[in-house]
Image (cartoon, one colour):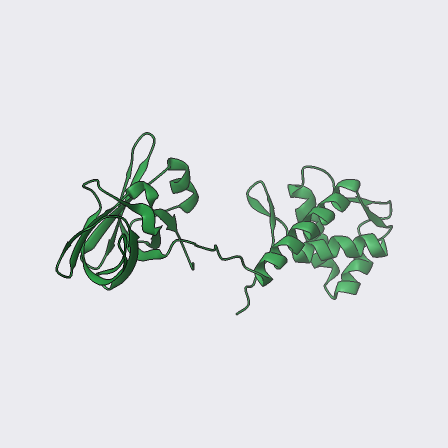
Length: 227
């Protein structure tokens, strides 16, 4: 799978510079005139002139200086500011293309991952409660307001709740009844809840094949996308 990316610089909330305009600026620098640059790029002079006019209108500083001779006469050269913009654009574009070719997927060490649907988001002063559902169960995660802003969560969205085996606590919240699949060791078990498999560390209340446990909501991390 390939990820397509296009880089645009905006100015005054409007499209200012994209790949096409950068190529035009570079051609003007190379050939010394808008007319010759247009011919080299295979576009009409009118289109090239309109692009230059649009860029100059949005730019906080002049991009092109035209010498005497009218719209079709004389020559044109880039200002130092225009050359700086080209360098900045090409640097940013290289970075974006590198990321697109080698997308980074977060490496999650925690073994327990639940794909949940966001049912409720309750923001308090210093924390945010996010309620997610899986099957007939609901689970609560507590994150910071900064994390909420960064994640940009919405009701009905599907996300990942991730927690380590050691996230088990004795508090009476986020409590579940599961089926014991395997007792790996004295304090380590493999359980199933609503078709979800969890690996847990701690002391548990076990009755037959039923196991009861609670997950600390502060220990649950939230991720979006592929993990």
